[in-house]
Image (tube, rainbow, N blue to C red; front, side, top):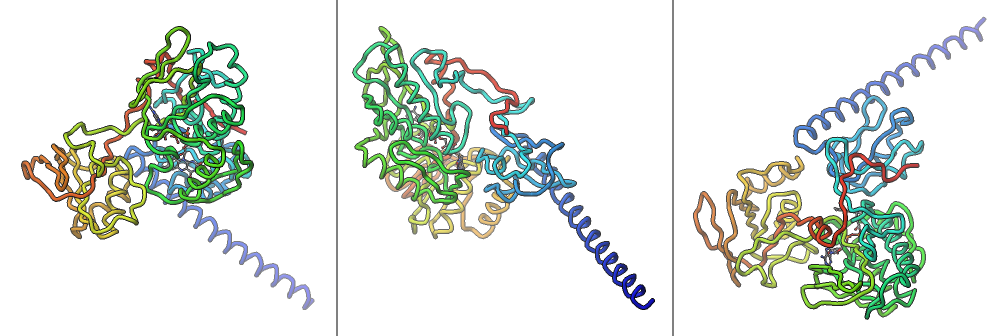
Amino acid sequence: MEVIIENVAAYFIVGILTIIILIYYLKSKKKQSISTEAKIQKAVEYGFHEPVSLHPVINYDICIGSGACITACPENDILGLVNGKAKTINASHCVGHGACFHACPVQAISLVMGTEKRGVELPHVSRDYETNVPGVFIAGELGGMGLIKNAVEQGKLAMENITGKLKNFSKSKLDVIIVGAGPAGISASLTAKKNNLKFITLEQDTLGGTVFAFPRAKIVMTSPMELPLHGRVKLTETSKTELLNLWNEVLNKNNIKINESEKVLEINKNDKIFQVVTSKQTYETSTVLLTIGRRGSPRKLDVPGEEKEKVAYRLLEPELIHDSNILVVGGGDSAIESALLLAEEKNNLTLSYRGESFSRLKPKNLEKINSAVSSKSITVMLNSNVKEILDNAVIIESKKEGTTSIENDLVYIFAGGELPNKFLEKIGIRITKKFGETILKH
Ligand SMILES: Cc1cc2nc3c(=O)[nH]c(=O)nc-3n(C[C@H](O)[C@H](O)[C@H](O)COP(=O)(O)OP(=O)(O)OC[C@H]3O[C@@H](n4cnc5c(N)ncnc54)[C@H](O)[C@@H]3O)c2cc1C
């Protein structure tokens, strides 16, 4: 009898404990759902909920709410859980790492380009990476597929296809010109070398592509990549410097020189040969591979003095810049993040923005810039335009202060980018709008 009572008591305690744990679990799930829903509401308000490019789409019939996608995502608050299912929050901030895609244990995520409402314009590219203009090929993010690993893979495959098809095109001094030295262009250059092609690689800026243009240190690689003439690269989390050193090392070892600071302005076809017009000269080639990404070229202010060496369109190593008078131009997240990073390094920071107020900023950036203004670590000039850049000063015209000259050592301009669509259309490449096309699925 005593044993029975003891067993009943034990079952009772276990039951009570299970109920307590269950209640606690359900409560925390509810709290999580409420918090995610509030974030979604805020994202809708700020215009960040609607994706602009590649983004995850969750199959709710399969999703088990493991949260693996949220943990894997290197960006903040792209995904959250509502009632045990993953939902997108700030989908427009997704940069297409695809970490969520790989992390999902039940393969409930696919990567989709554009939405039904907001289309994304992409060039027409065949399965072998050729455009509708015979002899002009496209690889990497320009074709719609983001991520370093994918760009590397596509650069290699596109160049293998070019090598195989070369006999179909008219002979010229060069077999192929590669335009753009991001991950896709680097991989294509290595493959061209491996296949003994006559080629050059032209880069408007410096080697490395998009990743190196952003003021952030961490780079995430979701799976190993196969780098031509080098082999398997297994880096799950790395730094810009480490990756850049690797590209440089492999290119140097194979005697490949990238023509940096040489922007391709036009590509024309004459007598079945392509004339590639750059900021420096004109080249002739049988084929062209465009690996120019989707970010375009930085938009210029077109003001006197903009050609000076102290003017830059990206911030690479803020930690090395101290005690300088700096002007940052722009009102987007890149401008704000750069200004904040430079202000942290004890520089004298002025931010000039032509708008009346900051709109469409990440909420955290808006908060931070407001507090930097309050603490006087950054001087913000709204409704202002840069008129001239001098050696030791900048002339700014603003609604409030009129024309002023401020002391200046460095200028960083973040005025957005000129998308490559016009450039592509001029070559004759067809561009179509994708409304929610699945790019990657299991
Ligand atoms: C903020 C941010 C963070 C990211 N983080 C990661 C990450 O952690 N991991 C990851 O895998 N992916 C990441 N990505 C995505 C990754 O950067 C891109 O998918 C990848 O760089 C695409 O490679 P690409 O070679 O196709 O193009 P890009 O890297 O964009 O390179 C294109 C190159 O072409 C040059 N170019 C353009 N026009 C011309 C012209 N007319 N003449 C000459 N040159 C030209 C450009 O200057 C550029 O160097 C991130 C993207 C962003 C925006």
